[in-house]
Length: 427
Ligand code: 4AD
Ligand code: MG
Image (cartoon, rainbow, N blue to C red; front, side, top):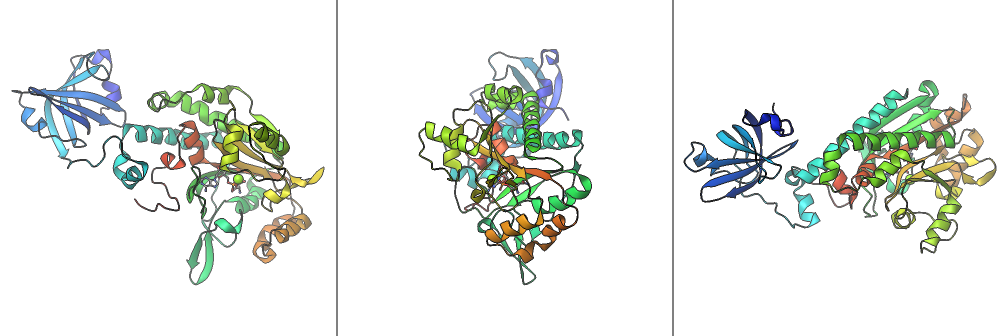
């Protein structure tokens, strides 16, 4: 199939080509019809003049109709994109009814019509970047000796706290949708040592922020014999790799989105900052917040903390009370855990949650009890400390959040084909 991007070059002047696409816009004059034809790779102005054989049919075309067009290419400075296709013949696949989307609709209306809005050049550009992000996550792990392996989506207990669990009726028993593959990863890492997965995770998020979905794509990794510093090194390499690939492959899309790429170039070229929790609290307070030591950091706090940063920052070693039971207490200061959240700059905040895992049985049981969880539900997980425990660490990257930040979008929903939030289940 011939694509628009392949025909927009001077050596095609005068050639006859056959392309397919949708009418991005239609302009009708007294003596001619201009159709801006769109395919996944670009736009080209197609023109038909009165008196020519395809004119009558071309004149019936409406916005968002789909068609095949055969015609000759000529360079024309007046045409958007610099080229024009003079229509020789046209075949309509589907004549569109009056299209319900125009400029200036509000966000709710656009998401109600996501199935149609999806075709827009802007949404298409975001989805192409999303495709590169997923592809490069897989290549990074494959190039670095990780095995790809899967965990179940139906689970019997929580990893990330009970308040965001989705309940499922499982043949009369209570089951949940997975929040993270982590507990299963810790079992699988004993045999495979370097593993990853890319899969949906589910959170019954009642907080309606710009960065929370109920279903999100989670790229998670677990590494045997890695400590908190080692896992940060891997996270940093992964993010640099993904951003570099997007900069190489998606120049055109970043331009369409008017993304200033300076910060993305910094991400590739400069080392990420590493700050302990207390330094992060200081930074927040220097930027006008009034946080007490021990405060949890949410979307609003992280927005302030990262808004002036030019590279991502690892926020490390949180007070133990702020993190789930599986985080390893720092042996030199057991009131804090060996963890790291990777915060994206420009106000975006957390994109990765990570850390070193508890590797002794007694501490683990104590931490499970302290969180008010039932030790019985975690027996198989505790087994992993009974039979040859090893030091290990891992992380979870929110892929939709990464796409949102790379594209500099105002809300995570824009980064997802058909987003799921507390208020949206359709389309
Ligand atoms: O920080 P979280 O909760 O960490 C975990 O789930 C760990 N068990 C991961 C691991 O170590 N294997 O989630 C990890 C990341 C967050 O940093 C965020 O980017 C994303 O997942 N995330 C969400 N993204 C969109 N909507 C939500 N409701 C999200 N919750 C978490
Ligand atoms: Mg987190």
